[in-house]
Length: 188
Ligand SMILES: [Fe+2]
Ligand SMILES: [Fe+2]
Image 1 (cartoon, protein in one colour):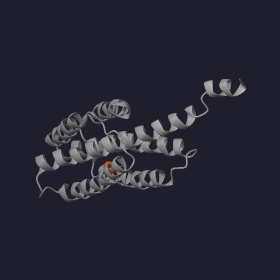
Image 2: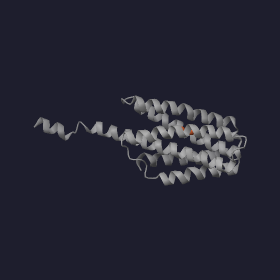
Image 3: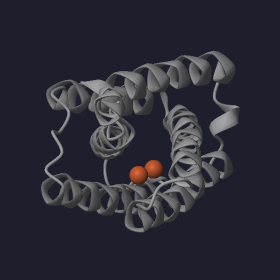
Image 4: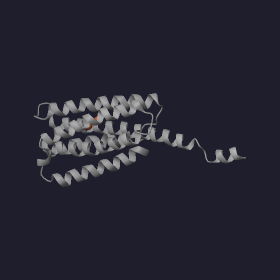
């Protein structure tokens, strides 16, 4: 009788919820890193390979590829369902990168600063959530990648992101878009 009552409370529910939370983290991170890679692809497509900022952007794009590869691998290893919206992140990321680069190199950097601000916040939040979980590999990856995202943000600001005309509005719009995308990619 007592054990039936305990079973009704589903002591395993917490474990189940936790596993789903971890899967959701991996899903959103893989989607985000894919989107980030697409942003830099879009920027380079517009800027070309010989613009003053091209090599800095290529370096950031290479790091995004490394982040993406790591989450791609984790998705397979842990049998996590990837985002269903990959085609959307592909087009939206590329369009954001190409669109901001078309406004000029500082606008491209403003885009990077805005995106990386939100990614930093997102990874920081995940690291806090992971403090109570036994997930050293995932936490280590996020801490490692977060440090590089902060470098991207610093590169962008050092490259004049904040000097682009209309920076506060552009930045706020991109940051809002990122927060919406992160919320969607956690679930879909
Ligand atoms: Fe990244
Ligand atoms: Fe980044």
